[in-house]
Amino acid sequence: MNTTFGVYHNLPFHRENAKRDNIYYQVVRRSLSGHGLRKDLKIIRSLVQKEGSKFCEVWWKNTKHPVGFDSQHLFFDKFRTCYNSFGFDGKPELLYKLSPCENSKKIESALVFESPVDQYSYLNCTRSGYKPCLLAVTADGWLIRHDLKTGEVLQKVYLSKQYRFKHILWESDLQRIVLKSVHFYNQSKPLMFLSIFLMAPLEFLALMPIEKSIFGQDIMDAAASNGFVVVMHQCDKIRFYNLWEIIENYSFATKLGNKFETSSSDVAHQASSCSSLDPFIVGQHPDGLPVNVSFTSKPTALFEISSNHHVISFGGYPWHYISCPHSHSSVFHVRSVKDLKLAKSGILEMDLLSVEPDQAYFHADNSGRILHIGPHEIKCLKLCPLETKMSTFELKNCFALNLKKEKSCTERVKFTSSGREIKARQDQVFNNPGFETVLDVDYEDELDVLVVLSSTDSEDTPCGIIGLYDNQTGSLIHEVVINNWTQDADHSIMMEKDTIVHIMKDCSRKFSCSVYRLTP
Image (tube, rainbow, N blue to C red; front, top):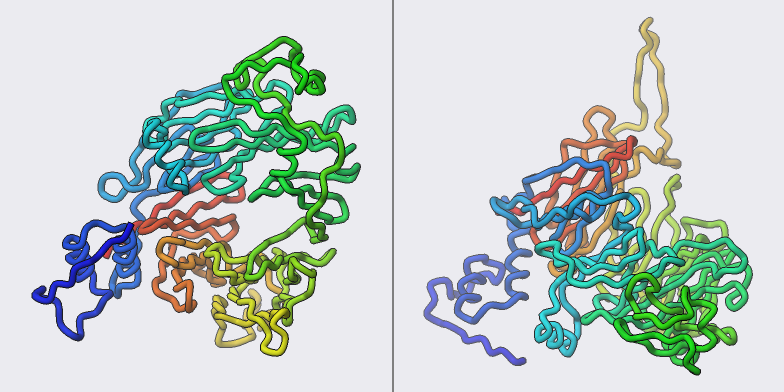
């Protein structure tokens, strides 16, 4: 859809030196030109970097269970309590609270679905009244869609009483989900199962056994992501298979709500895998989903690599991947997917040592850049073709964030009770994990802001710092100080538009959640 914006020369703010970042200018122009999300986001970004604007703590809550935050919704009590993060007075508002349940029926894992990404699915959702929902996997074997505003049950699919599914993840963002079962160590059973569903509307696609007889006796785990089945082996080996090839060659189609007959000719080989030989309705209790993938041979592996602890990240133009050499958790290699060739300057390693391993992965902004995160520094790098060899790439620095506050002296003087002076040199090479500076990193894609949670190493008054950095240049545009700070704890940070959520887990495994709201 093409949108044409008019130019108004008689507006009071129209003069040659008017700044495009002026909030009043953008709001008035938006009202004249029509509502636009991009303009709204530009206004919020301008408010974030405006001098004098602040992020104030508007709400906090303590809990004994983990806290979830997704799509401006906060989840407590194992996803049974849901808050909208933008309620009255800028504080979170309670949307619903599901009735208490037995531990055997608790929600194991969940994710939020608001709207599909493609126009066809969006139109189908609009016509059929397919509402934004919380997709939850329960301990008693159900996949349930809850209305995101009321908690009402919109749809229930019974999975299985034989295979306990515990994790739900996006196989492809807002398009397909994958459910992962627990591992089985009985030699007569597969190691685990993967179940794939299409979204908008919810459709069953595949229930796939991950068998040692097919993929190897040394398999440890498996996952599905972006059209690949990823199988992890011992000795840090990872193999990638084509999900669609597996579905086409080794499965048969069946739909939720249809009758499944194990005696039919095309599924006779599935009879031993089903909980009952009698016909049953797919997705209903007590039989649930049939195992509709049966491997008669090993599928073709598309790609095979080795990486310490199975750490892997794909990205770049053309495709590259980041892996860790064996027994090196904080050293990373950037190689080409095409020929496995190491990029020039493609070995990433920080100068300082730390107990916690460093991280390196392709940026979530799909720019092809790489974020290399150490204990006190974040580097942003980009793959560039060599001028002499266009087929060879090298890593170049885009920007670096040094978050370590240097001290004015390298020696600290202390005294004993008798008055004797004790001198202790501060170690500049090895970093105590208690004084880790960079604690968490998030990316706010709509504002194009890099969010970094760090801490000061002051022994007297430690505090946390939330830094908002321009994603293109690395320049600091805003800083928030957290004074009520616990140093010896796990911290995470998330930002969505004008809201920042800080979640902490202390040593006693208790959680606290703080919400910060932009107040220009």
